[in-house]
Length: 443
Image 1 (cartoon, helix red, strand yellow):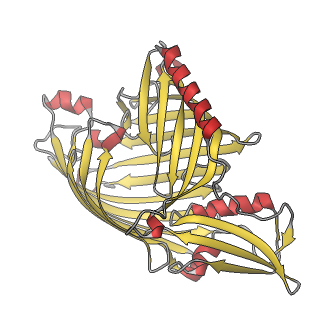
Image 2: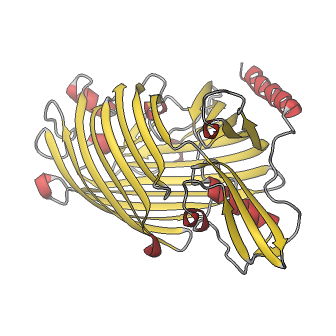
Image 3: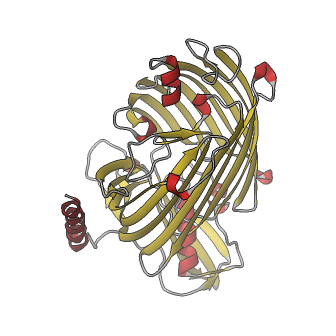
């Protein structure tokens, strides 16, 4: 069965590779030469302000541009997730070296119905209506409102402003939500003797600054209201069935990735620390999170990438704030298995081969719909991967035999800037196989 599954994937990749289109408009840099840039001109941004694009570049006027540097910066502009197409074309006019950045803006207002897999689980389907206004005011601000029914019904709102103060490089994010959240903890379910829900209301404000192009630091403040139908010690963080938690935290990130939606070059490092309760309402614990990812091109279209992440907690941590594997964090090969504990450790190693990269799919022949909804960047990646991870309770030793490990292969299909889809086959240590269908990059 395993061999047959691998053969199916291999044959599919061979067919796709053989028939892939060569007529796509993938030209983004004319010529194979370096040039000193005297002036930068941006074309096609009917809404987007110039500085939103210029602030993503790691070169400026007077610097030397070459094809490799142009490719990297083009991907950084794509990573804003508000453009269907980006091209960089240097040209010379009256002895002046110009760089023309041509972009095609994507559709920015999305009042659409949605279907979502909660915790990446097909048995936990949430559906409803979401309204998203991307690139609000042409400054890459994002407004979101969502009404979700089905699994974990909720009403949420958020506003993200990456340019709160342009000259100071300040940013902010505000989130507000009302949710009915199903209990995730198997231990809590055993203590209660039944499954149950939490009423979860929250408000969070993040305020930060971007230092240079790649460094960001932010402080977080928030308030959580968590209501449980009963009081059981450990299920709640306080000595009551209702937790009222004040949150104070800080985070730092370093991000040099090229295309954030599916990176093939660069580093990503993130660290955060949150104090919860601080003794108020008898709630007092902290959560630290670390995530390191590296993406290295090897030869041609082959990319090696790896990830190490850990979530650590200390204090009287309620079960709803435990560290979980099998929900958002998953191990391929153990996709449906759940682990819980105070701490979490996870790692991944993956080899990607780009079968199709940056093919333009234009469906302008479809009537009535705007052109910005009919243009896509298509990518196809073949992957080999290995995942491992475990959780532990406070006081328990950390040993290698605790780790669950899986291996496999698959393909990722990208239709940017809108979504990407992964179809994978993984096996665990006992060579028991499973198919995985997931949305977004693995990391």
